[in-house]
Image (cartoon, rainbow, N blue to C red):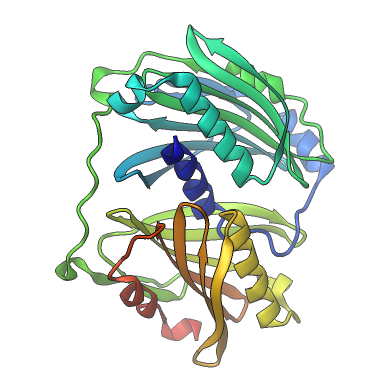
Length: 351
């Protein structure tokens, strides 16, 4: 059960690593406008579902280590004003099919609640086409969550609406009720996954990202993702570059604060980013120290929660925040941590 809880925490931490140091933004007009747009049915036959979304969902895949194995999370996200509509799919294969579904669902629910730093308002057991499920409402200090989770043939489906506390999303039930399971082709049914082999020294090489102004060394081609995060200064885009090396995640992230960083003390922004990272994994700080990269301010820190250890460096270069992160299971060792962190370089145009 611990593995699923770890999966939930690590995935969300990777996506929301930068936290929201500039504060959340709410726009009622934007929300109402989005809700009046025509909804359409979207689905994925390989993942075995379909649902109604107000706009075509952004689809991402993350490879996540769990208890020595690696599972792939498929995420489908659509934004309606300040409300996020989310469907997540994880196929645990024969291992999940053989497990007790209510226990898996309870573990997934508790992991989500703990990571979101929320409290449960209500919950009840549900079914979908004879498959076990759980429905719950929860709140943090800023967001209200309406969620349903189902286990179907070893696959965990998560259907969630996350809305600001100050906003009521009129189409919550419309989205949740629209979720349907569909037949998956036999080729899509996952076999019990084997842990990926760790990289060798020969596999590593630098990857440059001219648009983001940096390069870093990875053991394989990083998976690139983009996320839009609402703040008081408007939506900010976070771009991440991630590689799974065995059970270790290597992450480079960049976010341009633009005018929102004007006049701000760089150490204050760095402290906020560090605090957001530790908060996102519901962990505690192990160590920290100020560092520099040329004339640019930075911070290096170690953090832990009950299942993972993080080694990270963050730099503020002009209005851009860069982060280099190594996340690995607690009480394990990754021989290339320093190699990865030291590999970060600014490209000439970014300095």
